[in-house]
Length: 103
Image 1 (cartoon, rainbow, N blue to C red):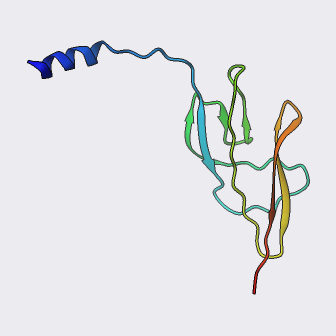
Image 2: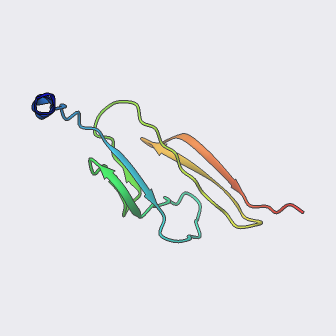
């Protein structure tokens, strides 16, 4: 009946591989950073397309297009630093971290 017909149609559906890419990674531990140091998120959870190198921290885009990046950083109380995301040697985004306490 209907169940068999739906299974038949479902088996015929194939979405084309559009070469998508996505990655999600985190740092395995704390790190004391230096000026212009690449922050490497060395524990990949997802790396569709294999475009993120968890050893160097570099993402290589496979094609021209729109990409979205988000990163979260933490610093200890009294600490501060700024970070940038770089594309083709140009900064395209920045985040500032300032650890302070309130009383």
